[in-house]
Image (cartoon, rainbow, N blue to C red; front, top):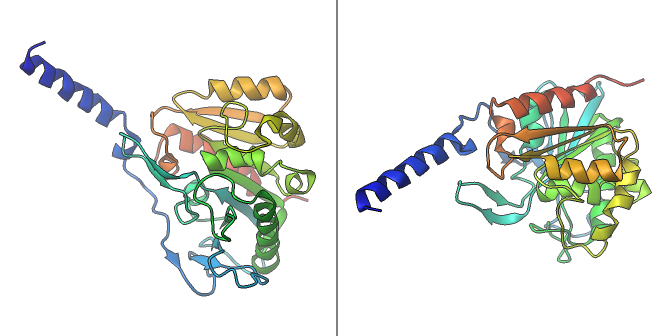
Length: 282
């Protein structure tokens, strides 16, 4: 192949890549910056549990919607982040932090839902930016943070939705259905990119994913993946053929949750699914 032809082919490949890259799609929504102080409508703040016991580096992140009122009851999105230290050739990155989460805000558009990002508690009593840390402490923190938000900011314990990207998506099954007490917290689940059963992860009890999935029961589950969701669908339909599951595909190859900020078909489908929890339940 001549140099001229090689350069031409490379340029064509780069053009196709750019046209099929989610990072080239304009974001219509911007996740609020982190602030400090008392939670207020439209603010995203760092909070600690009342009994933090000197764990100054352990906190959760809470957003109150722009239409928040103290006399109302609100559905609550709980979101776990992907693994940190991730980057690929498309420009996708993940820092593994709670501050880097975006699904809860992007799909709610900042209205109608409380949005909580709890930590995955590491052995060093800080948020673990990769994988699972201390499972028992992570579950205990999640339960306490949800209790705090429901008590102090009007969260409706009957409308708590667990969601996440990549590691956070796997967490919907691994953490969310880890035991009966955790399982009882949730009204629904949403995960994007990977899920237990189609992705092996470094937890000693990873092979028990089928047992955890049985705790789902009839609660709604929304799962999506870039390019194809077939592997996830095959695994979970085999384990729980009667699950109330919705499967969807991101048409872009990006391993990213950025689609929740863009006007793309997957976002419209996911937002419509989420809106079923916007209505108060008897």
